Length: 423
Image (cartoon, rainbow, N blue to C red; front, side, top):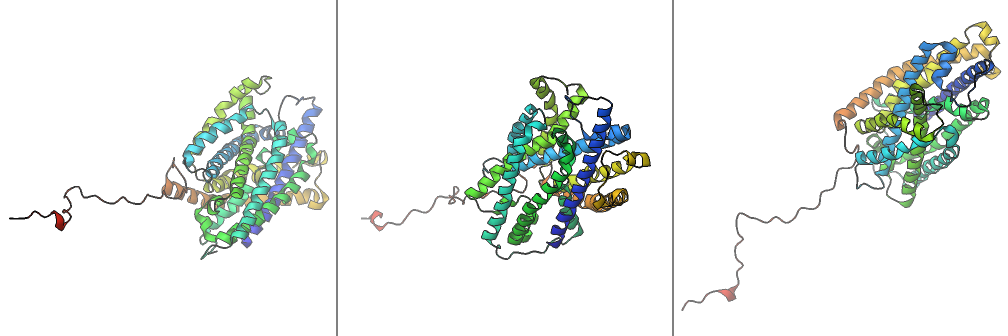
C-alpha cells in the first residue's frame, strides 16, 4: 500500500516534469520556425518534427519509432479495455467478439479531424472518470472486506515491479502532448495545466486504488478488471458505460497522432476533404484491431508498454532532448523560456534530467521490463494467443439430467392385482 501511494506521487511528479520539458521544446521549435515565416495553419506539429527541427533526423527517427509504437499499443489497450468492461454488463458474448464490435465502433474516429474537435469530449471524459473513481471508492467501503481477505502484497520481485511499471504507464500518457498543445490557443499554459491535472488525477486514483485493495486484497491479482469483483447493480453498470465512452474518447486521443503521421507519409495531411482523409486513415485502425485480438491481456500489456515504450517515449527521450538542445551557452541564453528559479535554473534542470534518465532506465526499463515481460509471457503460456475470453469466469454447467439406462429395461412394477390366476 505504501509503495503504491509513493510510486503514484513520484511518477505523477516525474510525468509533470517531462511534460514541462516537452512543452518547452515545442514552444522553442515553433518560435524558431515562425521566425522563419513557416505557416502552421493547416499543419499539426508533432513530437518527431520538434526533434527533427531542434536536433536532426536521427533524433527524429528514434522519437518517431518509439512514439508511434507506444500510441499504437496505447490504442490497442483502450480497445481491449472496451471489450473487458462491456463483458461485465452483457456476458452473452465473449470478450473477443466484443473486441470485433468495438473495433468497428472505434474506427469511426477517422472522421474526427483534429484535437480541436475533442474539447467537449475531453471535458465529458473528465466527468466520466470522476464518477467511476468515486463509485469504486464508495462501493468498496460499503461492500466491506470480503471474508478471509488477504493483503499479502507482492510476494515476488516480478509482481512488485509489474505494479510499479503499471503506475509508470498511468502517468506517462502525455506522448500526445505536442498535438494537444498545438490545439490550444495559448500552448505556453499547458505545463501549468498539466500539473494541476495530475494533482486532480491523484485525488481519483489514490482513494479508489486504496479502497478497492482494502476490500478485495489479493483477489485483484487474478482480476485485472476491478469491475469483475463488484456485484451487479445500476450504479456499477453506469460506471462501466461511462468508462466505455471514456475509452472510446481515449482511443481517439491515442490514435489521432497516428492518423497525422500516416497522412503526412502519404501526402494527405493538408487535404481539405474530410471524407478522403477518413478513407486514408482506415489502414491505421486495422493493425490495432488485429493486435487487440492477439493480445487481449488487459493489465499485463499495460505494464509491458509502460516499461518498454513509455519509459523512452515519455521520460528518457524528452529529458535527453532538453539537455542536448540547450547544451551550448548560446542556446541557453537565447532560449524562449528559461528554467524556473524554483527548479534551480539550468543547473537544477540538468540535474533533474540526469536523475530522470538514470532512474527510468534502471528501474522503469530494466527491472520493469524484466518483470512485465516475464508476466506477459506467463499470460501467453497460461491463456494462449487469440484467447476467446481472458480471465472470464468458467461457464456454469446445467445440472445433470436423470440417467436413463438404455441397455437394460427396468424390472416391471409389482402390482398384486395384475397377477394371472392359475385355475
